[in-house]
Figure 1 (cartoon, helix red, strand yellow):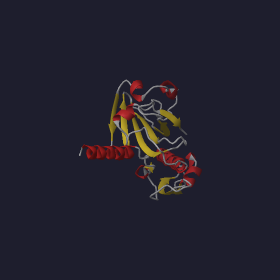
Figure 2: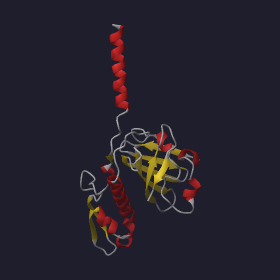
Figure 3: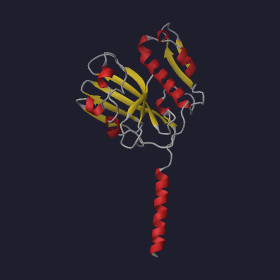
Figure 4: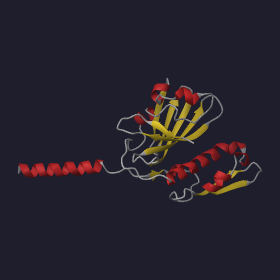
Length: 222
């Protein structure tokens, strides 16, 4: 009887280990891509769109593909809709980046955004707002750089980080192996909005983690 119990226990341990070792699923957060007209990202990254913006000439710009969005200059979009055009072009860049990625074999990231992992993000994983801000943030985590930090994580793959003077937003756009090392990377869309002042910013940032509980680093940004 004892041998049977030990055999069952060993088999259970092997099954558990296999489950833990299962490669992470490659995925793109299509729900975070406003105007995406197809359920998946095509192999060439030129996603189909159904998205309208007002043009500077008073006519409506009807975007039907990411290629068209990339070819549309900022000056062609009405000024008050530039932030929406910026998000559209960033999402298209993310789609292109994802199309060139592959499935990862292992991940050192959690199953999704958590307060702990957001706090461990590089402090410079924010849009470049100028004035040398990225350089001042380099080499530190968000938690260690910000004097005040309140993080809220939502079920839709987004997180907000409220600092002393600004609101930061993070959207997990894609999970995959983007650099060919077999490890999962996170492609995030980061947004920044100051409180008590005008202006906002958005950017993409690719985060990498090479070992369990290892430091999260920026592997790429546009």
